[in-house]
Image (tube, rainbow, N blue to C red; front, side):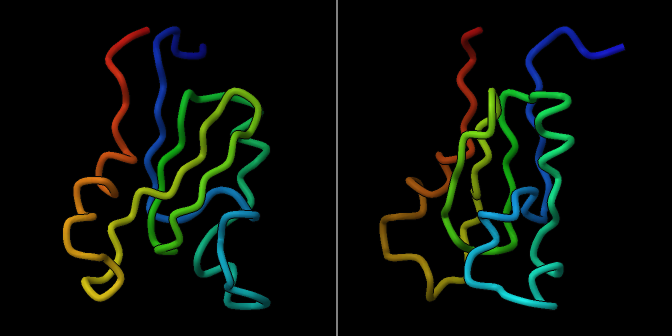
Length: 94
C-alpha cells in the first residue's frame, strides 16, 4: 500500500539520466541510473541526490529531482555553502 503522507527520496547516485552531467559512455553508469520508471510510478514530492557535483535539477511529473551535493572544497566559492545546502530543504507545509 502506498504511503499516504509526503514522500522525499534521498540517494547518493543520480536517478535521472539527463542530470548525470558530462559523464559519457561506460562511465555514466558509475554516476547514476535511469530510475524514471520509479519516479513516475510512485511520484515522490522530491528526489534529492549527490555524487555528480553538478547542481542540476528537473521536474519529472510531480517530482522535483535535484542535486544537493556540496562538492569538493575547490568547487565551492566562499560563502556559497549555505546556498548549496539549502537546495535540499523541504518546506514543512503541506
